[in-house]
Length: 253
Ligand code: 13P
Image 1 (cartoon, rainbow, N blue to C red):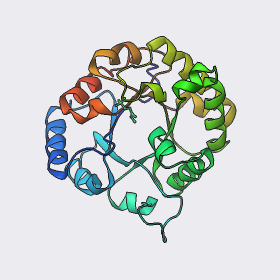
Image 2 (image 1 turned 90 degrees about the horizontal axis):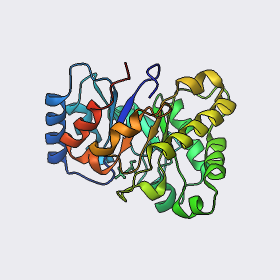
Image 3 (image 1 turned 120 degrees about the vertical axis):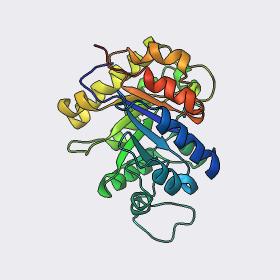
Image 4 (image 1 turned 180 degrees about the vertical axis):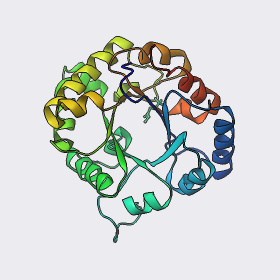
């Protein structure tokens, strides 16, 4: 981890938790989080939980984000949620292009780009997710796929964002990428971002790793020079596991 960059530890709750469970999680998190955590902490609850979680986490140590955004500000789009609605619910971040949305809802690279643009337009920071499938990795297409996913979204003068590398084969599988493999990809992503958004922004942008991150493997990943934090699914549902990962995020002295 490069100590000049912001470290970000984010929990993606996906389609988990009911309101009471979310409230209990927030109470436990705030009661046990350091006064000045070494990382920025973000939670991405599902839409029905957002306002409750944002109210419960009215605390500068933790931010809240939506798991998706529609490109339009309002309109006839049943089941979708807009940027102004996310802001109104207390969000400052939003996930764009998570692989589960790309797969379950056929989201194209172009749609992900429009969602990221909408996020910036409405004052949300997009966390853009990229990653290859097992078949793409086995076919030697990893860098080509990532390059295509980045090129669709980023250009010069892009606003503030974070990038999350989530290899699809590592999500929910228990098979995290090794620190060496993840570092190789993160270094590639930063280099490509440098071409697309410019070297200065690419130096500062946090690039998070996601895919079976747990307290047991976080330390080996976070010391890699281009890994600036984590986007955590399963382990973020348990506040003690989430806290244990946050505590490993202290920048190297
Ligand atoms: P897991 O941590 O459960 O593998 O999920 C990762 C993820 O998809 C976070 O967005």
